[in-house]
Image (tube, rainbow, N blue to C red; front, side, top):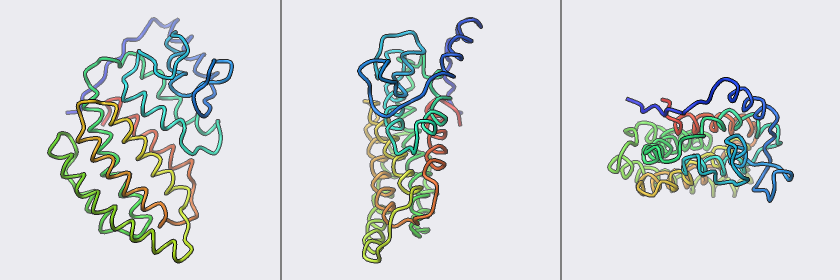
Length: 244
């Protein structure tokens, strides 16, 4: 059964004010010295929560903060694309600090990285057998399943590395979608690493990053990076916020 995260909501007037604030926010790359300089995803969470300017808002789970920071600074083609993809997941982060769910979040993000993101990158590189192996793994929910997944991802990464070297020799180039998948996997691993008691989840996600990253150089060149990154942003935040 999936754990649901309960957020404490304010009254309707406060909620409407925050929705109005959210609609006016434009997310930009990197951290900023002041709000006048702009806001990244997590600085926007602090703003919406009524806190001082920071990119590590104390109202939010450190796993969600790490995820938001990395996705914010991934390879978006524009601030509009970045904002459209990430803005729906800003308000739900408020109130998640100290909720006791960070280990579950870490395993869930590792699961997406290993069994969803890395296989897509491997498929793009033509490594369908390795992609199928990762998809067939048991869901990552604990130390044992994380270790098994990590070992499989390492093997897939080795194969992807060989394919990437062949692609380079043939003057192949990574496509935008392959790069976006790699960026999403890296976001998952950084977020998993923010949960201090889930080292095996971090290791499994790290192996998935290596597999996805190696597959980037063997992928097709014609694709839409924003669309892929938007899809993975939604998927990663959805599982981290407690949805199936």
